[in-house]
Amino acid sequence: MLSASPTQEDYLEVILRLLEERGNARVRDIAHELAVHKSTVSATLRMLAAKNLVSYAPYEAVSLTPDGRNVAEGVLRRHAMIKRFLVEVLGVPEEFAEATACRLEHHVGPTVAQRIEAFLSFVHRSPAGRRIHSEFHRYLRKKGSAP
Image 1 (cartoon, one colour):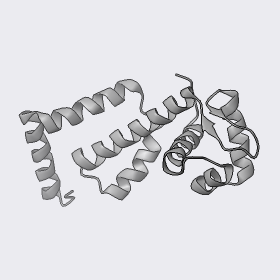
Image 2: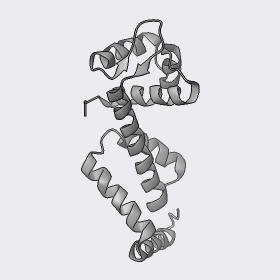
Image 3: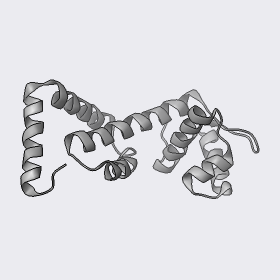
Image 4: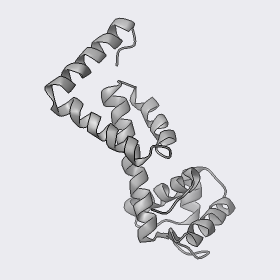
């Protein structure tokens, strides 16, 4: 898998979302979504194009290459998994879980992601996991930080 910085991953994630929601991704839309200047978007897109993660030409719509799509989809999967873990297992309020998932999605490697997925499955599918989950939430309620 090609490497991208957390900022570049954010760009790829936004481009994928725009492509799925609107059918295209333009510099001004990316700038709006990320709250940055269009010149910043253009510079970042040039870097992403140099890594063969996007197809970009000035004044044209942006598209993801197959590698760029793979990176973006991986970020989205990690984001959803982390948010689900925070909300469903730890009982973190959704708005905090969303913000935290946005920060963590770039730093969770494959081994940790696999373990979190396995734990989520264990908690939801295994009697022992459901018992641990219930006991943990009961513990939180006693401590005054109920989910």
